[in-house]
Picture 1 (cartoon, rainbow over the protein chains, first blue to last red):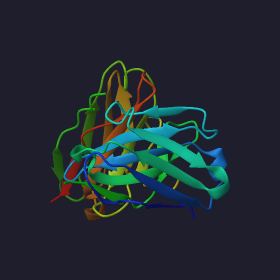
Picture 2 (picture 1 turned 60 degrees about the vertical axis):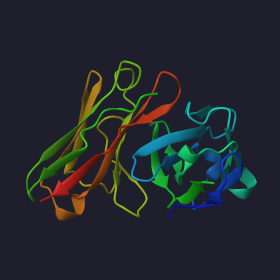
Picture 3 (picture 1 turned 90 degrees about the horizontal axis):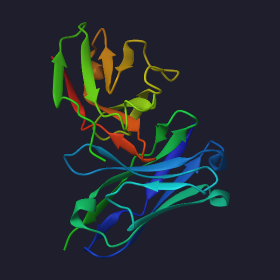
Picture 4 (picture 1 turned 135 degrees about the vertical axis):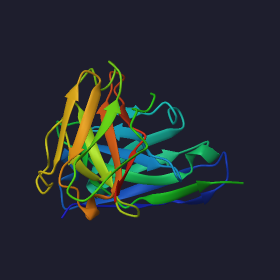
Amino acid sequence: QVQLVESGGGMVQPGTSLRLSCAASAFTFSSDAMHWVRQAPGEGLEWVAFISQDGTRKYYADSVKGRFTISRDDPKNTLYLQMSSLRAEDTAVYYCAKDRRDTWSYDYWGQGTLVAVSS
Amino acid sequence: QSALTQPASVSGSPGQSITISCTGTTSDIGAYNHVSWYQHHPDRAPRLIIYQVSNRPSGVSNRFSASKSGSTASLTISGLQAEDEADYYCNSFTTSDTWVFGGGTKLTVL
């Protein structure tokens, strides 16, 4: 069964950096594009970033562009989200999600990791 | 990248049908057939229930159906069951090579 396990969340101060990881298993990670999606407390889902299966295309939400970087390490079956210049409004549960090929949708999700930005 | 517009809440009794609307623009829902829907129970991972406007992944009940007209997409759940109580989100790819979610709709089964 496809499994996605996020890690790296925690409580940090505004202006600092954090790197999230998403360990993938039970599918050919290198063949699939991936996404990060977040949910702030009491709010809805917000798409954050996309990386193509070969890593050449990366897209970001305007709210994180220039501050967040998505990347992947195929030999390690791991997706990353490097977050810098963190703000209080970045506080959220961050989910990694597998792209369902050729459908522009997300067919498997992790359980999420909480990032809290507070002074 | 404004969020797609969904009603904040809908409700229905067991066995009834409900429909959730999702309104976008000609830059997202109106531009492509790349609309998907997700079911999200608290403390669980979101679940894909519809992709490409009206297609159900294997394992999703045929009580879930969806469609699109212009820049508005709709999700219908028929034969409501208690387990359907959850938050529902629409999502669309956009002409800016980004994705956008709706604000979410809380479904209450009375």
